[in-house]
Length: 413
Image (tube, rainbow, N blue to C red; front, top):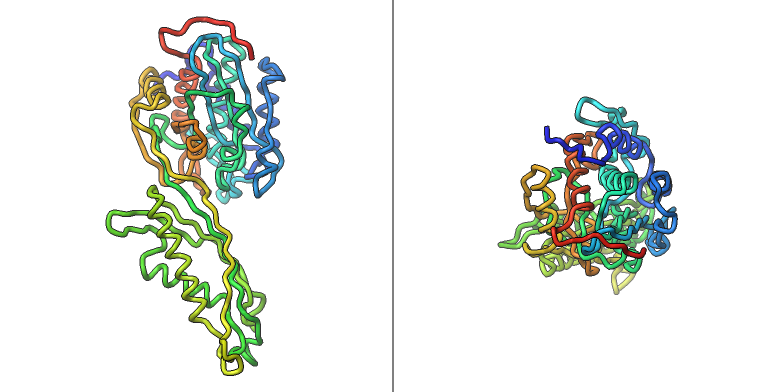
């Protein structure tokens, strides 16, 4: 096992206790208040200046609203070097609420087989917190640093999308912890588009006069069937173009004896290629439009215009795809940190979204690193403690090591 107890860092026992406490805290998207308070208390106990800690109002502008905004710790540097931004998100998916983390050798799992662990992304939260605590407790020399704990990542990267950039101190290097292997450097990710569709049909008695109704459920069923049959649902491969789509939520109808008047559908489309992603969106819209035309009321003899369902769309780009160049300074610094902690850097491209998508889009190119999460978003989720501690070592190196040309300075907050 690699020695991850660098001088002046937290011990493995201390850092393990930290992540266990974080995973036990409920905090799905929009309800991160207890997590933010825990992190803030730990920072203050370690000697952080209260003026260096703040939250923004990202939750006020998010569709979900929420309890708290992004949490920011900004430290002046003792070494002359570019400011570095360290990022992780605090929220978990709903299956993790009620988690009781237990340790089994070098793994942490949930004591309840029906509950997720929340290592995604409390492990990343703990990596940032343990790094900040080590610097604060031991006075480690460091460049200017900004720690950003984001909210609402799991519902569209809202925290990173809406973070107040002025609070970050103009970082020139940025690193995000969210994933599995700590040596894996994610330098790009797909883009995602979300659609919310309301299908409005026409209610009628399903036994006495079904021909007078228009079934919104039938429209949805025909459209989804068409997408599946034509290869526009699930994994999509059209020539050299690739992407995915998913009808993830469908709800509607009131009773078996009533022709369904309304159905709500939530759909997503993803691709690294923005133009092909738009093609997927177009095919989805076309499938529902064709289905609405097909499911017309059989009472058209009384209505020469014919009756059919209506579609109401609400759509938006959730996050744009990106890819960092191989000479990106953050990528080079992350590679160096991995090598200095006895690891081998591995480059990767993600097929899901990361806070790095929006940070990069907003002018802060960000590389993402893993922190030991496995089987995320499931009841089988676990945390690999050896990988978690390696991630801490890499983070501490990034936060406290700079180029040889750096020199000690006094910088104002």
